[in-house]
Length: 166
Image (cartoon, rainbow, N blue to C red; front, side):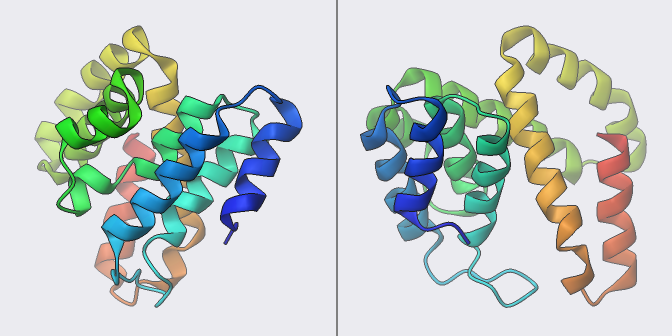
């Protein structure tokens, strides 16, 4: 897992004007919000959004997108609220996090509902801001890279199927 200073340095290597404070605040907020949550691998849950952010630094994305990646599961998986994200990180980051959260809700729908809604939601997300889709795709990529840690075969198949749908 990337350490806080490593993530900031990766971003600053291609964007010297990046808002270091924004990335640092997002890192600390997400780490605290996810607390003791664990992934199926036994790793701290917090490692997932950091790895998603790392994938996006390889694509040289802007500081707001990196902050969004770090925060992308906070509304869905913690007690954090959209209002809190907006207050602490600004309207743009809050809008991006909200967009990723809305895309995540597709996964909770039945297969028929998901098939009908997938294309519509992605087109809406694309028309608003492509960074939402990039965060979601990096999220799914990291989930697929760690799929072998999930012991339940049916759950692995479901996650793989959802990823193919996306």
